[in-house]
Image (tube, rainbow, N blue to C red):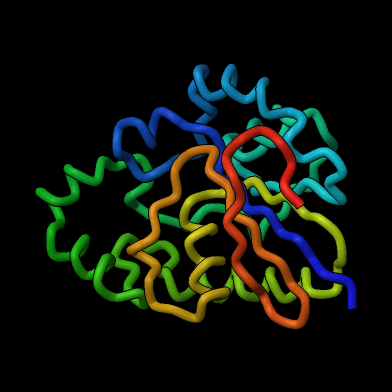
Length: 190
């Protein structure tokens, strides 16, 4: 069985992230776009470059200068009516609903997708990759990366994982999914 190497990379920074808002389909912040030029060579030899359908993931993938495949399963969590809302404002206007959402992974008081639903979507997507040997780079969102990690680690630590813009983790499949932390320099690790 050939192994699978999956590198999950968070899209570059957006204004919503900077302002502590739930995301909309916003573009990258200009500084994030400029910072990416130095990362073009990071994923040489990549078998496939995947990204979510949102503008911010497509723009980040385009900055690598490769053909990309838009994968609906890599879309961000659906935050329903909270899209574009500031988290600090929700602490004031809907504190009980926000707390319920943070404490209960089955909860979706915003009318969108629960963490459990997101996890099931990401788990199904990971299963589709198990027959695809080689290196896959997927540009996606913090929530999708968290879901992949919790699916891989079989843990209930979803809200304890922070995913920063342009951060990347790598998952490998060789009979079971394994987490591999990669270095942050620009050289390719083996």
